[in-house]
Length: 300
Image (cartoon, rainbow, N blue to C red):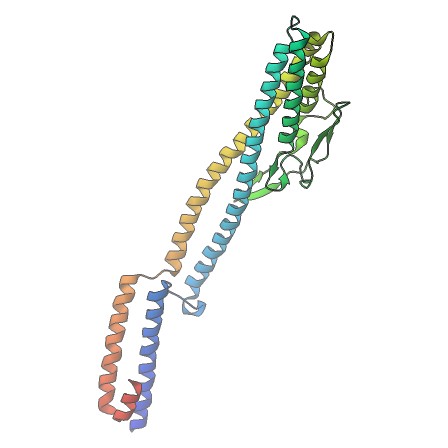
C-alpha cells in the first residue's frame, strides 16, 4: 500500500492530539487532586466516589441533627440545674418556716422569699432554646406554664410532643423534654404548685409551721422528680458525646474511601506528566522530518 504524505500527516495529527489530551488530563489531575473528572473515565471508581459522597452527605445531615439535639439537651440540662437550685432554695426557706417558734415578723419575709422563688421558677419552666419554649413539647411558640397567683391553679399549655432526631445508623434521639414530665398540674408535688402552696402556708397567721411541715414531703417529691429528669438528660448528653466520636471516626473513614477512589497519586502523576510531555516533544521533532514545516510550526 502506498503511504502518502497526507496519510502520514493525518496519523501524526491524531497521535499528537492524543498526547496533548493525555497531557491535559494529567495536568487537570495534578491541579485538582482528582483522578477522574468524568464517570466514563473509570466507571468503577466513579461508582465508589458517588457512594462515598452520598454517605458523607448522610453523615453531614446526621451531624446537623446531632448538633441540634445537643443544643436542646444541654439547654434543658442547664434549665433543670436552675430549677433544682430553686427548689432547694424553696426547701431551705420551708425548713426555716417549719419552726413553730418563729415570730410573725420573721415568717412574713420568708413568705416574700418564697414568692420570689416561685416567680423565678415559672421563668425557668418557661425557658427557651433559641426562640422555642424548651418544655412545651411541639407547641414551642408560647410559654408552656402559667399559674393563677390567687388560686394556685397551674396550667400547662404545651403538649407531649417528642422531637426525635435521626443521628446515626439506626439511632434516634429525643431532643426535648416536654412539660408533662414535671407531673400533673393538679398534683400537690408539681414544682409550681408546691412552691405556691408553701408561700401561702408561710403567710398564715396561725398554724403556719404545721402547714409548712405538711408540704415538705411534696417538696421532696418535686425535687426528686427533677433530679431524675436531670439524670435522664445527662444520659442523653453522654450518648451524644459517644455519637460525636462515632461521627468523627466515620467521617475519617469515608474521607479515606473517597480519597482512595478519587484521589491522585501525585508522585506517579507528575512522573507520567513528565514522560507524556517528553513523548509529545519527541513526536513533534519526528513529525518535523516527515511533514511540511508549516504544519509542525502550526502545531507548536
